[in-house]
Amino acid sequence: MEADNITIPYLPTLMDNPLRLAAVFTWYALHYILPDNSFPVLGRFFRKTRAGILHMINPRVSTKANICRGAYLGNLRNISISGKSGIGPRFKMHNVILEMGSDIMMAEDVLVMGGGHRFDRLDIPMGKQGDIAKTQLTIESDVWIGTRAIILAKNTTIGHGAIIGAGAVVTRSVPPYAIVGGNPARIIRYRDGSQNQTQRVEELRQGCAK
Image: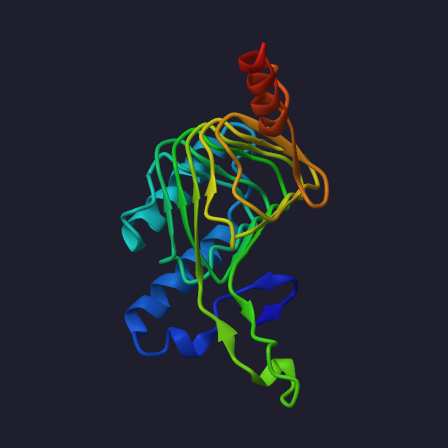
């Protein structure tokens, strides 16, 4: 459901628990009303308020998390955030169970998509074939995600220390310390300066053959 470009959780999934419904709406109301965490002087207070209230609703979210204004976290249950990880401005997650490590940096307009529509039958419109169940995505610690990156959660892991380039469309798991970019995202190199894994394996094979 959308109103004035603000996305709120789908009501029927929350109506069975009025207290939870009230808590979710309270958090989103404060989340959008409060100025951004970068606001001069008071930004730190706004950051602590967002994270603190969300922690009361979902204890798996760290009170040290940096959740920027405009982020959409669904029903607030399907996410865990460790340490001082950040959620960028206007972040959105749909049909995914997201687990985030610590010290994650995230730019604006990042989208994480899981699930999807079934489309295997040709005699029924795709919109009537039902949905694919939520998918699990783990973003390990010390990951940097660039502006407008899209992560399709059919992959399972963004490895420790990886970098996702701006505008990348990630369609598969990313190894630790890999730098990826493009559509679909490919490994550009590793943070230690080496080339992609295929080239590394080939170099090792050639070395063994000598």
